[in-house]
Length: 197
Image (spheres, rainbow, N blue to C red):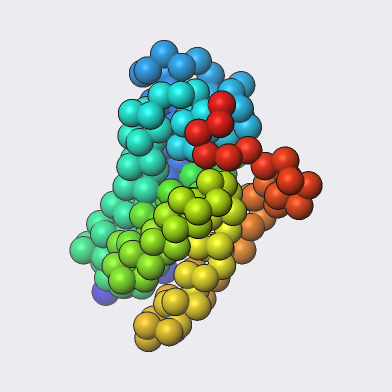
């Protein structure tokens, strides 16, 4: 039986998983220095890529997306669909505001994509495809993330995932909040492009 107490436990465990800073871990393993002093200072895959180390960036992308997906899948398997949504939101918060780093974390894009893939695979595929197309055409990771985040709740609604769309709208709002500096640079035309150190 699903109880609020169980949901709190799920949220806490998912948050702690989401808070693991895999970008910093990969930077340390690959000898890239303190990622918070490189490029934008962000701990995500895009900033790892700015070091020029593509394997480290790919591993960061997979691990950051994987922690959101794993949190959702485990919660669904052990508790149910309601807990899966709670776990996805908590893992996302953990990545953006990790207790291990004084609540100063990443921007949540990879964790968002992994979470959506696990919650509703067709919606997640659409989100990934949107990010990939915008990134390939315009070569600006932050813009691709913002477009994908904004469209994903609408895609979920269109595919009959109305309840899920509310969660995705909340995550999208947080992504826009976390990208406030990027949005300012996009308006000024100074946002760096993918692969630029």
